[in-house]
Amino acid sequence: HCNDGDWAAGNNRCCGRRCSKSRCYETCYQVQVDMEYADCGCTELAEKSDGSGQFCTKWECDEYEHDSVASEHEKYTCRENTGQYCSRWTGDIDSTEEFETTDCECRVVGTNGHFCQEWFCFEKGLDYWYPNLLWSFLPICAGLFGIWL
Image (cartoon, rainbow, N blue to C red; front, side):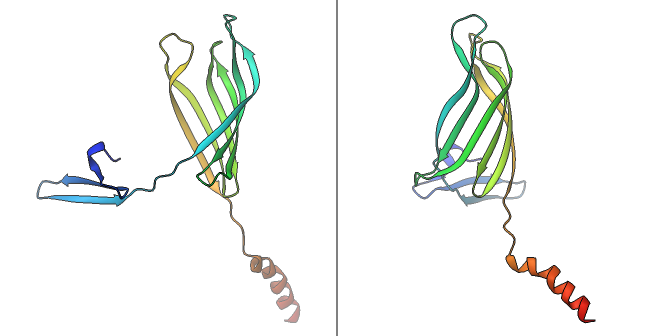
């Protein structure tokens, strides 16, 4: 965690002074800054319980990085709602490099009870693994070797 005063000027390095009982030392690490943009749209609506409008129960997003090529496609589904907004949702996230799922729930309700002010989310995922094609020849070679014995 890098605090405001810990940033080294202009080079995306975070430096902080750490002290133990015997001495103090400065620790620095390089920070990779990623800018991502999302283009989202509601795909399914529900009426608010007080009749004041609608809220999304399903939505999809395309996430973009700086090169403007869609890097992830995300689909979200509301699992619980308060009658005013979605209070718990799950998501399936897919890209060319990995797949992820996410579960989010509202932890802090907004002042008027019509929105969530703070979310708690848990995301898990795995990278895709592309096996080397040479591994597909292993059973063939093992079979041939077994025949020759």
